[in-house]
Image 1: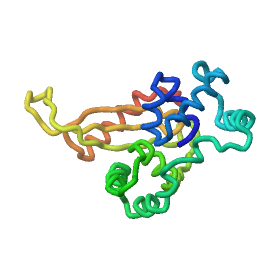
Image 2: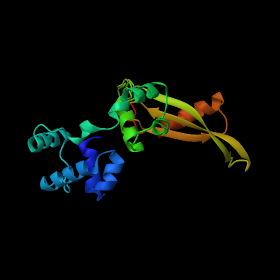
Image 3: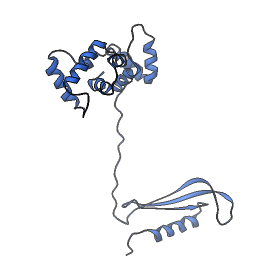
Image 4: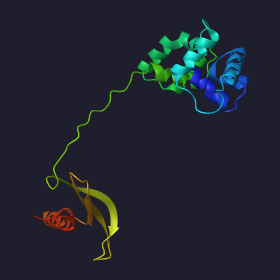
Length: 200
């Protein structure tokens, strides 16, 4: 549980009892921080960054720990970590923990704990390719399903030919009814005729 979550609920007009139930806190604790938030003018306007909130908490309560250090889920962190590693989803973890005597945390609190203990995803590495104007064009055919052939009036399987210029990302697209070589060559010709690039 973090102070941001508590403040967001108070700012939304939730009662101390509702906030305490949702975040697994004592109602008196919520009431104390509700009064503090009112004195700090934190119930409306822009919400300060977490570092500033911690500084205000330290200044106001000295050695007292803010509410995020009293999460009832801390005792279950190891078990939640094990369940996450086993591939369990937050709702399943909440249901499993709810079967244990004395467990009182909310499903939203379990969801936040799962988010905290789950290892960060490895970012996908991509390489940006830079090409000079007129140097590269990317060509592809894609299946678009059934369309009416205007020459015959019959429904036929259709394809879309696309040519995308590498530098400007300008695209030419044409619907056709086969992927034969003559059709592909004709599509290339139409694309070059359509291309807005200056001619040499």
